[in-house]
Each structure stands twice: as C-alpha cells, then as structure tokens.
View (cartoon, rainbow, N blue to C red):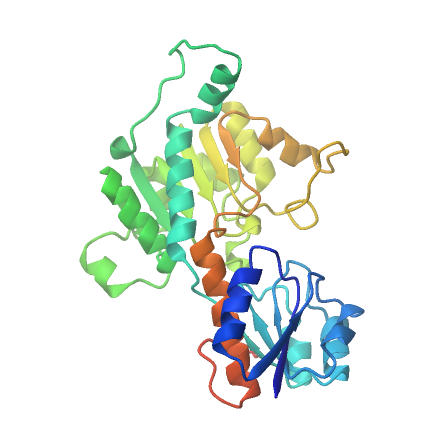
Length: 334
C-alpha cells in the first residue's frame, strides 16, 4: 500500500486531509504537527512521499535526512519554493511539486478590502470608537472609485484584484514584464514601473520574490509616487524596504500601508506574543500606526484556499509515488 507522510498539519487542515483519505482508501496517510527538520525527517521512514508546508528552510541537511530514509518525493501545500535548496534537491534526485494556484480570490479580496479600509481611515476610526469618540472629523475617507489603482504583476492574483477594484469603479493600470495579451488589448499596461508609480493613488504588489524585485519599493521609488499614496503588499515581504516605507509614512508622502507579508516575518508571524517581549521594534512601530493595517501573512487563509492546498498537494504526491505526471511539478534547475 502507498504511504504518504505529512508534516506541519494544522487543526484547520485536518478535515480536508481526512476528506482526501476517505476518497483514497488505497493510500495510508500519517501526519504530524511538527515541521520538517533534519531530526523529524525520521518520522517519514517507510513512506513513499511527503506533503509539507512551512516557512522554515528546506536545507541541504533536511533534504539529505529525508533521502536517508528513502523519501525523495515531496509535495508542498503552498506556492513558494525560494526556501528550498534546489541544487541539493536535484543532486539527491528529488521530485517536488507545489500548489501555485489555491485561491487567487482569497488573496486579492484581502488586498482590496484592506486597501479600501486604509482609504476610509478605518484604523483611526476604530481607535476613536474604542475610546467612545463618535465625532466624524477629521477622519474623512477617500472613495475607491476616485483612485487610480496601479497593479504590479498581472498573474492570477493580480487579475482578480484588478476586477475587484474595477467593481468599485476605480481606474486600473498595470505593469508586468510578462504582459497578458488580453489585458494588453484592453490597454491596462503602462510602459514602465516609474509610469505606474507616478500615476497611481494605490499601488498593489503581486509579483514573486526574485532578486530583481527585492526592495522594489524603496526611497527612490517612493519619491516617484504621488503624495498620499497607499501601498499594498500581500505578496512577499522582501519586495518592500520597510524602513523606506516608515520614512514615507513619517513624512506624509505615504498615506497608508497594507502589509500582510514582512521581510522579517519568519519566527515572528504565526506566534502568540501576548505577555511576552515583542521581538521586533520596527514591526511594532507599524502595528501601532492607525494608517497601517498589518496582518500576519493571512491573506491566503480561507477555508476554500486551505482545502485546495491540502487536496492538491496530496493529489500531486500520490501521482509522484505512483510514477504518474503530477499537475504542478517544480523545476529544479531554476
């Protein structure tokens, strides 16, 4: 019987894991809530493949430990592969899959909702309500339909975000080095990122964390932007130079910031810091600002998305161990 072992299974994933098990009774599934590490790799001994999800790096040591127990077929329940030692994986003969599309709507909806909340100054209004201050002024909002919304990256998530913002009545412009032919026909694209920065009232990032994109939002790019710009990052933390955004917020150049991903998030996000010393003063600074809306990498976190992440990852792994083509293989020679 085929055996699959899963790491870092959360309580909210268990119903979907059990759903998959019920539909695939010829597969023996075991799992743990522990992350995959060189030490926990031994838990997969006797299995044909593993299903994983974590921000912790899949280091050469971790991959070697898995290979040592006979497992080289690994399926991620998420998109990102930047934390995998791909060279080592290739050397060891790993086959890896990911789930590149689990719910573009979940992430795009979150970006749109949070951007609208910043424009309406909800953070400041919420604080006023908590103090029973029921005066309107000076907490006046901006309507989404009055904004030019600039979308950087027009893949699955970017396109959904564009549709949502157009539903509000906003004018949408976009930039992508890989242009979508249909969007190009409709005239969404501007020629350069600088063009987008200069025209947009709201700028939302939907691009991967590759070297060319690291700190694409920085002091220089912020200078190019309109006064009172709103910046939205639900994509990858390293896209934004956080210190530059703080300087922009301090000067008033940046009206508001939506942050679901943070360049220093590993080890800080998805932890309960209540009653403990908070480890990141810069992040605390942002959380405390009424014109900054911080969420701890939860844009994806809906029942729809979690189900897709679990089911698609197990489908992929089952295909790998059965020697069949997986739906979304990862190229190891990137």
